[in-house]
Length: 234
Image 1 (cartoon, rainbow, N blue to C red):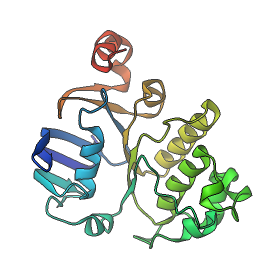
Image 2 (cartoon, one colour; image 1 turned 180 degrees about the vertical axis):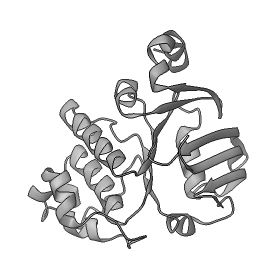
Image 3 (cartoon, rainbow, N blue to C red; image 1 turned 120 degrees about the horizontal axis):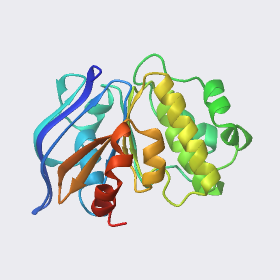
C-alpha cells in the first residue's frame, strides 16, 4: 500500500434520524484510483459527503493526509487538498466555461494551468466562451473535473462521473483519470458503471447496507465476477 491519503475507520453517518453509514472502514493510498461500488442506496455517495464534511452528523475516524477531519467543516477539508465533484456537477449556468473554471480558489501549488486543462479537455477550449447552461452533460462533467484540477487538489472525490454520458465521453473521462493517476493524484470514485470502473481502478470496495463488505483488487476481478454480479444485482 502506498502512503495513506485517506483512512476511514468505524464511520457512521446520519441524515436526520436515519442511520445510513454503519461502521465504514477503508483506506486509499497515494496515487491510487479506488472505487466504491454497490447497488443504489447503500451509502456510497453518503461516504463521499462524510469525507468532505458535507454530512454534518457523523462519527468515527476520517483521516486525510494523516489529519483527523471528522469534526472539520468542508472548507477546512478542502484546504487539505481535497476536491469534490458531486453527481450534480455544480456548474454555474450563467457563467462561461472560463469563468466557471477560474471560480474556485487555489488550494495548493501545482494545479494545472488553464492551457494544460484545455489540452486535456479540448472540448472545453472550443466552448470557452459558452455559458454553463449551453454545455452538454459530458461537457459539464469535464468542466466539473477540470475546475478541481486547476485548484491544486491532490485527492479527488468523484461521484458518478460517467452517469448518463455517451460512450465516447465515458472513454474521454477514462483517459483523464489515467492522466490524473500519472500525476500521482489520488481518486476515490463512486461508479455504477462497473465496466468503466474495472478499467480505471486499482481496487474496489463493495458496499452493502451502509458498510464495506468486500475489497477486490484489479487482478482478482476475473476470478470474482460471479460474486461481483451478486453484489451489484446484475
